[in-house]
Image (tube, rainbow, N blue to C red):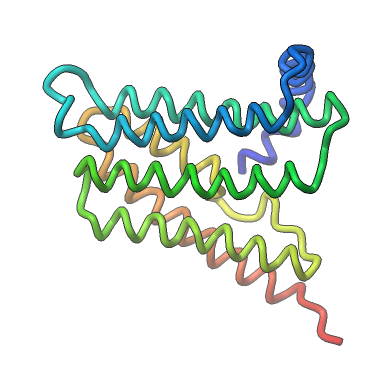
Length: 197
């Protein structure tokens, strides 16, 4: 869904890519920064039961998660601006995205935000969504924009809804639903478009 929105935001995103690209820092630097901030977010979530008497782990975790998502969007724009779009960069970006997502859910699990089974189900479905895209695209079937719960949507739900006191369990529940629906959507779309020799 958000990938479709990106088209309308393309001019603004290109300006951001130019601004960050003019720093001389490589696209991989911004990819790494996004991952590092995702780890900070995961640590904030994981320390929930220790630091919650002093400040809200969910709010700080959410803030770092949203900033991480911003840099995850910037790296591709910088790569296009600097004409450094490479297969290696795309590979690292994809792998780092999965590491970041697993780290976030691990933080939620350790932080005791909701029942462990729901967190495990959310991350399992999220990874299955990514796996179906990878397999489909290896067959030449484009999956970008297919489904209501791609990675960006899932993390936005955790980052924004999860900041509201007491709503993290519902945020995880929403992720389970949209990831599950997207998983099924991608199976259907891929099955319809597979061309047998």
